[in-house]
Image (tube, rainbow, N blue to C red; front, top):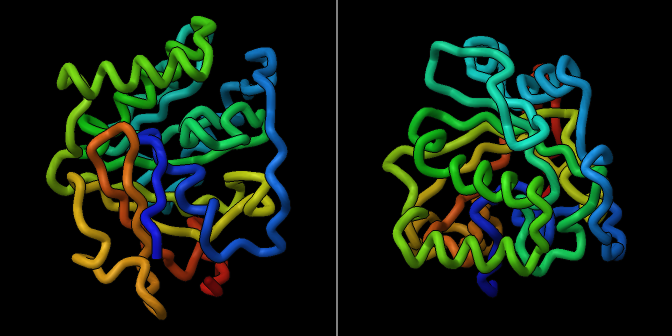
Length: 231
């Protein structure tokens, strides 16, 4: 299987571009819309962010919400996890849904990912809110990697994406599967048995960031209802 590439913000397009999509549809190319289209009421955003992981994890997590100039602390946690709702600009730079205002991707990072994965997306968001174009954001990402400001993920970096309310892309028909993600420095897919026939493990390579993300579908959503394991 050919390597799939995505951006370090990571969580949206890589999972649903190529695998296991129910009733896939052609991707519409979206133009950038007013920031208001991407915003949520603060209480709704906090609840959606917490839905990324089981309550035993997300209930004690720090929650960030999208503000006027970037993400802001909406609830202070105590377990090292950080839950947010990623928007469409976490997608790969060649994704036609890069500006899709419908995308809402609840994700809950553990402490290692909070410190080594999340900052790239938060920085990208500040550029978005400052009015940067997709091409300018890509150049900023390349420069951050070249300068060492963005590097490989920390050991043990992972996250939960188990929200039944996720909307990851039009191509996926909204939500994908409940899943966990593991962030590693650039690694051969086959080292984890990923992307092989019959394997439940999926891998995608970061671009331009030096990361491989492994996706592991799990059977239940965070509310304990069953999710589809059909790939």
